[in-house]
Amino acid sequence: MTINKQVLMKTRPVGMPKLTDFQIIESKMPEVRHGEVLIKILWLSLDPYMRGRMSKAKSYATSLNEGDVIVGGAVGKVINSQTHEYKEGDIVEGFTLGWQEYAIVTPASIRKINPDLAPIQTAVGVLGMPGMTAFFGLLHIGKPIPGDTVVVSAASGAVGQLVGQIAKIGGCHVVGIAGGKEKCDYLTNTLKFDAAIDYKNENIDEMLDKYCPNGVNVYFDNVGGRITDSVINKLANYARVAVCGVISQYNLTAPEPGLRTHRAMLTNQATTEGFLVFQFAQKYHIGLERMAKWIKEGKIIYKEDVVEGLEKAPEAFIGLMNGKNFGKLLVKVSD
Image (cartoon, rainbow, N blue to C red; front, side):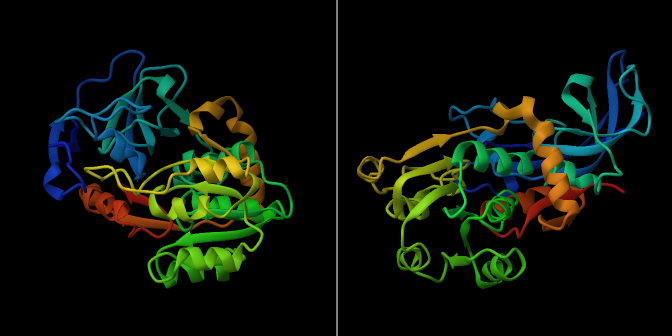
């Protein structure tokens, strides 16, 4: 009988998650039934949206209950298949495999990935949900044109770093907002953003005036809150705001006072559109082919922040909520 290590949501977090909100247990795996696949998890993805699932607030995803295994995307290897679609040894990715060493799923919840295309963990990174979020969110929601000024918040994160590079490929002037000199230097020196703003140590409004003298044409918003208030106030005429995430708001216990945006949106005839990457699921093959091509050509590079061991997932996730990650945050569960 296989023993499975799992990370549960022990108590529902109030405000910023704490280590005591999580529990690590070991349980016996049930037998694999006809039509099911047993997967050994190799790589686990940690993403900000998971905080929303820990809340009772209305969202696009079902909330976790106390005692549930935390839901999350992962890459793994098939070790037992009772289906025709998959065989032992196949490498697969699934959005809901969870924070655990093993998962039993049906074929509909996973997809086979080609390990020869790129390192397998990219299936939950640049060639997975974050990559598709950047690709479709920028190109289909932000709709940049050459010469536009594109501003992206959380610019050194899994999605933001890709948004800026795609915008540069498209001939745009790109300004990233990130926390700390190291991250900002990475944006300009390595990713070749035109400018970076350190929100922890610089005045965002003054820096936006400096780097976006003609206003912001496209804002890719990953954070919400006061950073977004500043950018909205600098929009150019007919600007487009793509709302991808609001990580600054996920842990609040009371609403944060902020700018009333309607005047800026009205006077600049701007548009704001929230989106979920899943709405583009039927087009993923287009984004994956394009991103893989850009990686091969050296036009897209990506940074991973890797933590070793499933038991480190709670601590790493809390760090993510505090902006401590640098690149795509991954947990290496097994070799």
